[in-house]
Length: 277
Length: 194
Image (cartoon, rainbow over all chains, first blue to last red; front, side, top):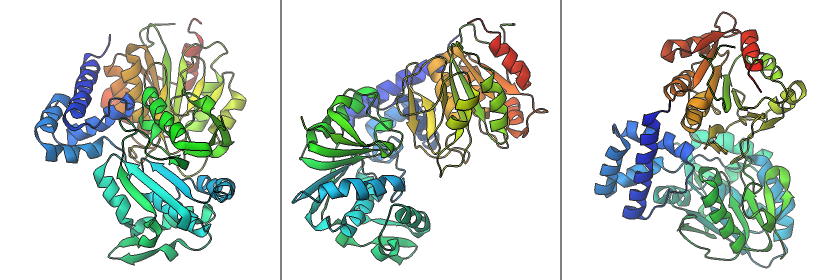
């Protein structure tokens, strides 16, 4: 016996993704189905839709509704200096190599609400590299990009962010970089003078610049294998020879098509280096 | 071995445990013999902010290989896969797992419900879910989802469980195909023709 309702749900989900793509050119068709199912169920509960096709109907006919619903398709969970050992490895292993370049370009792919972008900017500032760096911070979610650019986070989150910052080898105090106002911590905008926030899709767009470091953490987990291969292909094309790719702590290149293009650089922190040839 | 509480063709087993789970899993997982065919996936609730020692711990007591899940890791029969701390473990399809940072479910990441529901969608009737001891209600929805999809579910006998809340919640919500003590679970799994 198989569960008919699961199969109908999956069928309607496929139709929904196709509809979203045709109507709005957002391409979620290569997203991992197992977590999409959960998120679409949440959206159905939230918007009181009995079936996926009811959700689809509203999405197709109401662009403002889609703007709300898209928040359910993308996951926004991040912390500043999340996985401190990763940032420590960037500081101790990758920065000494980046220092040898006259100018440095970094791509934070899938930057969401920007916590990692601000973390990187702080790290580069402390290592004396920020002035000659450009950071491209890209995401498909316009609301997330606005938040990322604002660099304003709830003050309750600062205790965790500060612990991470210290564990990541921060040279001062995280509070050196923000001012508190009305329950928010507002980060110093000087940090992001060198940051370009831009709309970019790993599913449909192409490479836009040559870069020395790609940091793309806990984004690929939401993609199926084919879309992962597309994204890593873009990173491989964007990176200079010997450039670096940092992934999330449970992500790896080993199950993908481009593993042979990279060497492991800091294996425990999932930092890879583009091969020279 | 009676067949009514085991799938006719068993491809995967998903196991959920919380408080008291490490002891229970020690009994259950150590009993699985070399040559055991189904793939085994385990969510044991663990602290989210530090590395897990489960793989090391169970690697020493299990005959089967034990690994921590990585994103898109291929599924292999006869291997025990643990959910990593602070990620949900999902079954993407019959060939690979997936991880996610979707919101915490019932205070837990990894969540038993998330694993069980995704496994139910991927494995349909070829799935066995086992819910063990725990002091919360995670797993109840998951057990119900597995049974709706045609898979089977065993729940640890609440009187034996160190914390009976989790088994009791699952039984109250969606029932089970069998309510068993750990030694009975081990016997049934070992009795399966290889």
